[in-house]
Amino acid sequence: AWLAGGVQALASRGAAGPEPKLSDEQLARLKARLELGPAAAGHGEDQRWTLARIGDLIAVMFHVRVGVTTVWQAMRRLGYPPQQPIHRAIERDEQAIARWRRYQWPALKESRHG
Image 1 (cartoon, rainbow, N blue to C red):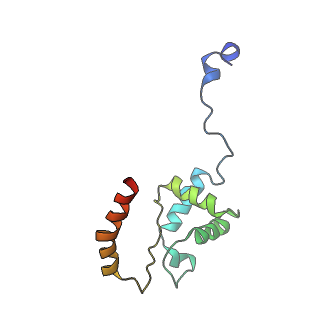
Image 2: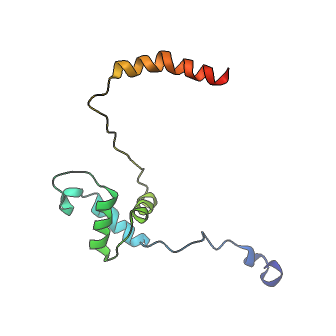
C-alpha cells in the first residue's frame, strides 16, 4: 500500500464495520427528546427510560427499527452511563451478610492460598 499510494495510503480509514444506524443529527434530536422524560413519550406509570422504550421512541421518531444493542451503542455515543437498577430481596438479612463477610469470607480466602 505504501509503494502504491505513499503515506496517504497508510492513513486510518476509521473503525471497521457498518456505519451507525443513527446520524449525529438524529442522536442530537433523540437526546433532546429523552431529556423531556418518559412521560412526554406516553409512559406515565414508570418514569424510567429503558433500552426497549428508547428503541420504541427511535422507531417513532426516525421510522427505523433498531435492536437493544444498537440502542445501547447510541446511548454510549450520547455519553449516557450504563445504569442497572438494584433489586434486593425483602428477605435479605443485612446482619447475617455482615457476619459472613467478617468471619467466613476471610477464612475462605485464606484457605485458597494455603
